[in-house]
Length: 324
Image (cartoon, rainbow, N blue to C red):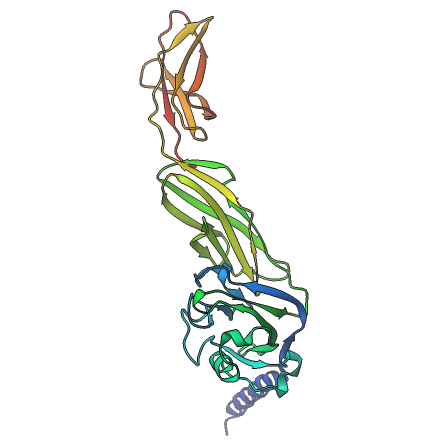
């Protein structure tokens, strides 16, 4: 026999035994941490705020009708299958070994008489692939009216919510229409990884990023007031940033008033949108233009003053700066 073949077989057998040992020694996890409440406030199951992201693999949500499904792997509810990777039973998570688990649909309709009958019933959801048992009690279920809420346990270690701050644009930013907005955020969580940051304009999702840099682009925004928020998710917990207010305006045509010379000063007014940035340039030959004043308009019109030099010929023009 080939000694190398014996050695190879022995290494493979040893690896199989090692992996089998790891699997055999992996114990189920029971979440015994503080109880939290999850409430789905809107019908759109694609939004992070409407999903209870227990882990990276199980995100419980529902559409306006039908039952719960796992948004991490499913896009809609399927009878006898949803929520994927879960099973359900009445009882307490600490007694998981003696409970009879089934899928959510059977638990709701077979064990009980519909979702409304599960309200107030102590129950357990088993996250199958991760072998996690979670105490859960429904407090509302909207039926065809949509929405649901429940109280559930959390991991035994203290649940630490991520932190998220919008870094761009700044609060109070004013832009000229049509505006392209690059939304960016810093997000982190102690001892873990932020797995998703979703951005919302006036509560409408404009996209998400799953890794640094957390940024998305919203194009061609029409004149209006917008509220920008970001929702960060990490390990089944989520947090929402403070609101950043953005205003998009229809830019006025820049025009200058008749100039005035008085007391050694040359001045004129020009039309402007408050909040937008403008640059005043001057030239002695209409070819070489020098910027002499750049500012964010506070009023309409804006007033400009320069020192008057008798005997000189100067030309002035005003332009609106591009959106940042």
